[in-house]
Length: 268
Image 1 (tube, rainbow, N blue to C red):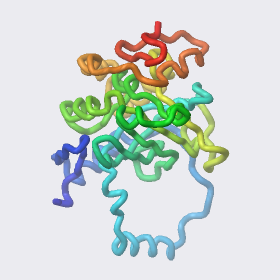
Image 2: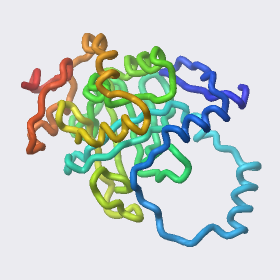
Image 3: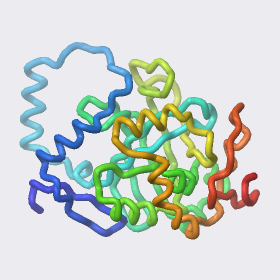
Image 4: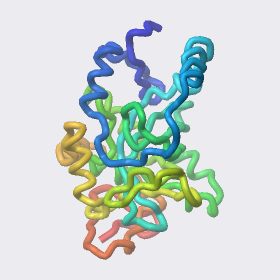
């Protein structure tokens, strides 16, 4: 593979981005995260540490990281504390057609904090899970059909295909570090127990300023993205967990067309 190109994987379909590494660096600078986030305490790296890092970069491989070639940006509420919301930058490896694994950061620039992981499975794999396991997996149709989940920097047609492939899928997400939650003071270090994240499945659940902040920084429009995905509604099947946070907010929320709970039918 030419090292001057950036691979992007779409559920087994691989395309080569026309952006060179230099161009990609310019792109990531243009959309870099500017939200206040944690800066871990500690001394500056010594000259010896920097030398060891430079040697390791030359002599050691990064094969597991090289395969993290899908970049997604969305939002996560914590299931047990839904007003605790954050922007989540996913760097993912599509292992096979039914399973992907992602590392989560609070930004997309150098110095961003790794604050979680997410595993993504197809509906068929979810259906095989024991009932007591399913409570950990959030549905994705609301994220996709609302326009909140995006794949910045790739052509619209490629992003649309990626989202189509992710319809009816589920994610299991743990955040280990409250490093950049919206409206909250960040913890300087990963503290406490891991937090199980969920998805937004109704309009009004996500803090609007959180969405607007992301859109302005990345130069996207969530409402326009939502309009472009209206034809995906016909692919949506009722999902487990859609109504998990339905009554968890003090402000009004409303149904997203096509997003229904398999146990309760269409949410009013």
